[in-house]
Length: 394
Image (cartoon, rainbow, N blue to C red):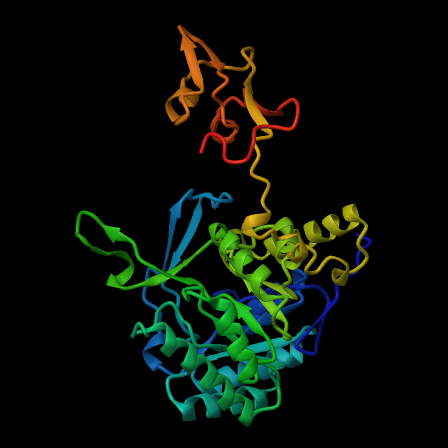
């Protein structure tokens, strides 16, 4: 690897942009060491909550929805893993020990319900030696579902309170379930945030149709996995050019390509969790290696050379070229005559005679048959000339 992956994040020097999110995988110094040995740039210690009942997570606390092998795009980690089991004093001692035994930045994570909780827990982790602190104001296991305005106000109030109390960097972790995360990020910046995390896990719910009740202890649960990446990218690219503080991308990172996409959308660092939970700490090394390979392939010597590059290439609705420029073609030698393309084409552009299928001139070039053909027998080819006029066939 030739590329330099080092990065400055909230005034902390990281050897690479892969940060491990607060979870069981960062719950003890022993686990933090595993993450460091796998090569991560920094860790965030599993969250300390003021609400003591959350310090004892029920069992079982994980379910895998979809592909149980954890394959990309078909995997959901449905979890009821809550706070660190430690008391505030034990949590602080774990941070102090981590700072003594690890050589990478160690960030704390706290979640409180009262003003005094925010103040005292913030002082606690700063005194323990934490390099920064994430504010978990958007836990998916929250007892009360707040209105969106209440969530934003609570996040800003907590940020302001903590900012007045301590001097280490403060990074609130945003909820993904807001109508305008850009507005929320700007408000948090105004409240004194040194950076933001986009995002916490989604609040999810699954229902057992036999018992007709929610699974996982009858409550909401965290709902994460690689499927969430595209939502995160959507808001990264809208937010990163507008704020003056670094953004940690969190949600959906599964490989080095995903990490590169987040940085192209403007992220300073990428936080990962679910992939480490289901694949082990070796996933960290793999993601870092793949990110370096991407940079070497593109000729980038540092992260700043491509951070945010995609932002200037996002087109407005009126700028999208709406001409039809392609149509589908079918290779009869590869076709298995399954008939899927004919069943799904809403334009009636696939005809069949016996076991022979062909694409008709009514093809709109939508591309769905290409994506779904199990044999890869269909492809898109350019239309001759300039393509159909805008709006044709709509």
